Length: 180
Image 1 (cartoon, helix red, strand yellow):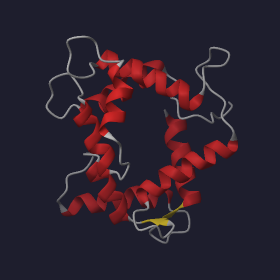
Image 2 (cartoon, one colour):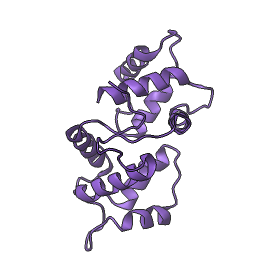
Image 3 (cartoon, helix red, strand yellow):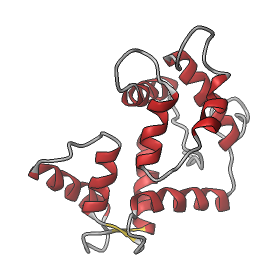
């Protein structure tokens, strides 16, 4: 079995389920649409400052006339378009795109920096908890939440220092991607 160098999921049905979960996470008011503001807030919380007018112009062409935001179908179309831009068009129709090792490494470093909030080259349990909380994937309070995060880190912490370094992060990301 060859390993994919893209972040695409192999199964279209899993892709759809995961995309639906992401859509629902952005759709804060549960109205079935994602507005530019709903899309912009989590990006800003992650430190990915976006220009609201640029974001609006980027997604405007995907919003159907009369709607104030993206429906799930619009969101799927936007995702397919971004997927093709970042990973290239499907080659051979197998759903796999080929990207260079250098690009994969750059993408991993960028993702790592999102989690490594203090820039020390390691992801601590507190940093992982902060990012997951910002994304709405963890409650912001609760003692057992940090225990869960520490367990996540322990699963990939090869040298048992309680931190995830860049190589451990890459291994973790590859495992997550390949499991799907």
